[in-house]
Image (cartoon, rainbow, N blue to C red; front, side, top):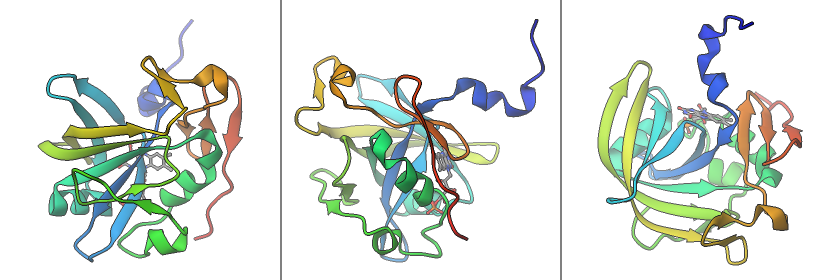
Length: 187
Ligand SMILES: Cc1cc2nc3c(=O)[nH]c(=O)nc-3n(C[C@H](O)[C@H](O)[C@H](O)COP(=O)(O)O)c2cc1C
């Protein structure tokens, strides 16, 4: 009735919303990397958690600046998100390579992405190494949503707004059966 899936248990918890984490880095640049292992954890104080691979530059940048913008993009940005997750800010300036338009944050130093549906400005409140990852608890200082894309119950999915969900690898979903396959990024 059931079959073994323990080796890739995490895919049983996908698709899930992906946030693009914006940080400021020791190399003086802003950097952006997608993270699909994220979740709200508390309303008071407002907090979310993200799991970041210890080897990712984002982990180093978060430890360095202690703040992050969490950018929610739309299904139309699947390719960009995949590309941002296929390069490291340690090696490339993703802002110039991907011609990212930035928007200033009000409560933190890292900027956000101007194409975002929503941006959560957050500050690191806890840091917990778990296996190959570091789980950060981030206190949300301010959250903004693109005008006309949400009401007080959340995104206006029935009016054409679609948030990006990560299936696995280069496959993405919106809410509903549509699936988008990103092209493999050049090395
Ligand atoms: C859709 C998507 C979701 C990802 N989710 C995570 C995640 O939850 N945690 C993580 O550490 N890396 C995740 N990655 C991989 C990082 O984004 C990737 O390693 C990236 O190159 C790190 O960039 P950086 O070195 O500039 O921080 C994801 C990649 C993609 C494309």
